[in-house]
Image (cartoon, rainbow, N blue to C red):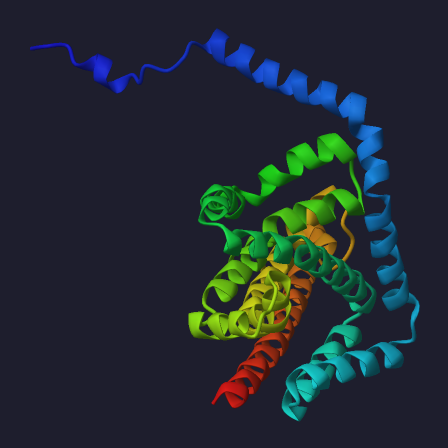
Length: 298
């Protein structure tokens, strides 16, 4: 009988070769971090200040004032008293169980991450909408960003910037930004060609078409992307807590480590409640934008 055992052994590189490859990659990255780590930290100082200011505002403000502000934002976004009432009940539930400070820290992190994702993602999405070549180049990068395990993001960020809020924020943004980019590109490309031709007929410049026609019409689709970004950012809360991000994720991590079921359950439910609240608000706002667009072009 023929010996087919060689079929079971994949012709992989030798162990010594693999070790050299790994050592070369690790050594190169460590050298980069030693030479440029301090500069990178200074580069992200404005982001850290923005996060600290946002966190200080929410954690130091009286809770009735914070609830009133969230109620106002909920009403402006949804125009629904049911959603406003649900938001207030959710916040009261979180506060009664002693998770108010952690909730405020999580909200500040999600707020800053969303703002950064919009500032970074929308221009990239606009750029993709202008060129099929750019779209073909960026799409594979987005595929990798969306499929790479979230823990992998933490390794280079921690090696470069250490432990703390900013490294966690950067990891969350990298993980959560692809939907904003994809939906911005999709929304702009879906704008009717007839409307663009009409804008050309009126002598609109390229930037005028983008600002006055394409972006307003694509806004409901962009809001759907922002909704997905917020959900992904919330899903990274527990993972980011491993590198020093404060909020609801840290009690969940302690509960996992020490097998505290009640602590993990309550903080996990708080994250779920906030995720549902953000989801309903962004969806309601997107639907309002969609109805407004239909009324304008109906």
